[in-house]
Image (tube, rainbow, N blue to C red; front, side, top):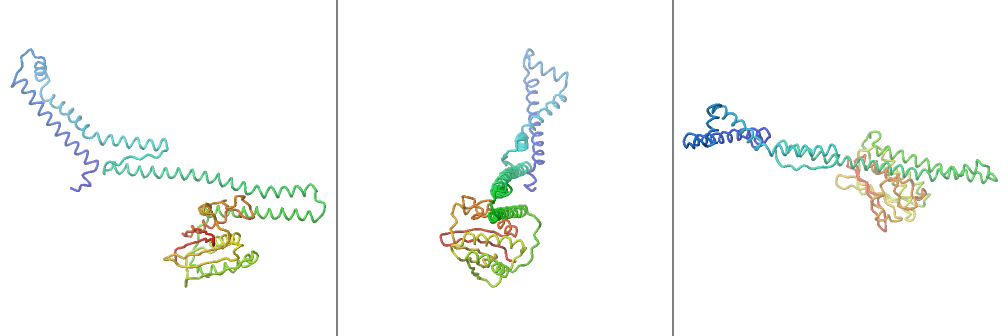
Length: 367
């Protein structure tokens, strides 16, 4: 017989039943012989109390009813003894389930057997770990939501306060001449554009991070895509006094991607490189193939990103500038949006920075 089936709960109870019957029979036979030797083979004085009691039971009740009752009691006693470990283990599993369900706490049950109870304990441990993970994720989500609300409130309040201040100044007719009026209107307009950009970025980040609409990928020539994107960035590069260089190390790079989604990601990366790489006067776009991956590097040669900032630059509303300036640090959502889009394409994005250059590296599985 297969050991796998012998070790099941069913067979354990069968073995406990058989052992209880055998143990009870042995006890009954031994008791019968003992009583027989005391009463008949080695009779005690008639005055002995136990001798009189045994004779009375045999004469008035009979040997068969007494043996039957003793057999049932001995069977129950031995069956309780042989199944005690199984019952105690089942009670331990029950207490563990109650602790998990009532208190919502992580609890691990020791897996002691290879039968159904052991499998049940193992599955409960897996369920408990998943429950604990879900609770931690829920707490992180709540903390992230609060952080998001705090960041949005801070970034919206600053330009909105300026807009309201200048409009109030104009509304109270404090402007002495048209030139001053136009000056304040222009400032309010620029602040309103900052607000619009922040709201657009926030909407885009929410759409990307929540999954948004499903991607409709198509076969995309990544080399041609990046060349076109670099050419479209020439006016912005010129305004910053920069130029670009395309470093192409491969014959072809084809991936599965949604072009318009990918466009937003690389626009954010290039904008970030221009913002922080003005001093280096050059933007470098590197294309290569590493194994089964297409690799794109967006590099600038400006200010180095501190090592303490590198692990956090893809977090929403994180800026290396402690001043949180809208002009130097952007909305704080661009890199988070780029990360979300790259990951939706089953890609990976990372950053590296030293005293000479800063690289933003994206990798995608080749088509």
